Length: 226
Image (cartoon, rainbow, N blue to C red; front, side, top):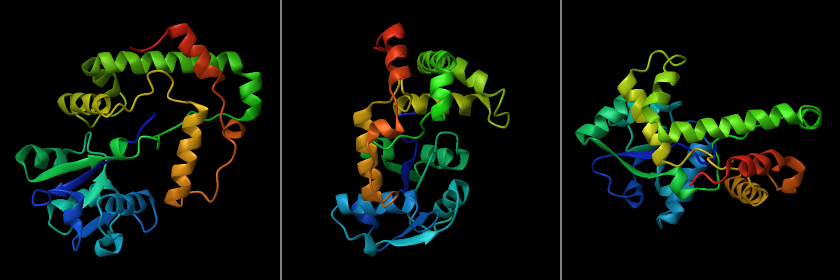
């Protein structure tokens, strides 16, 4: 999953991140990704991060309630199937200022992880798994409604229309790694971003923590996605 799914959601009176100076902003916990990315976005907007009142509230549902109740002016959250926020967006009560996929394209949502011994002993299985996964992402990006129907078997509480909207939102954010989503250069950029975010102290050589052998082989077999 090559990009994050969070959006910066704000009340309708906020036109840009710069307008958040002097206002309350909901985060999950001090120093976490929601907090640090917000401070970086403030700097990009030309305002002092300390001018924003960061309030630790908890998970996305709690942060959504804080926005809707007027307790805070903005927060970051994945809105794809978050019904209260989506309904408020449709009414024009809240808006999306930007997305982390746009602002931090080198910060992926997830990697496939395996132990070194499995990379060696289970290479054939891992190759089949990754190729099938990429094929699945490509199919889902072309058939969001059918993909939603499959997802509903495992996430039973989400109605079909909402799940379909979420699938289409994933496509719009370009989250899927349709060509594998992994390069050593990308791992380097991700590490540098994580260092700047304070999530890790220093970077390591990318080939010590990642291998593209399976992505490269899958891309060769499947050809480019576009």
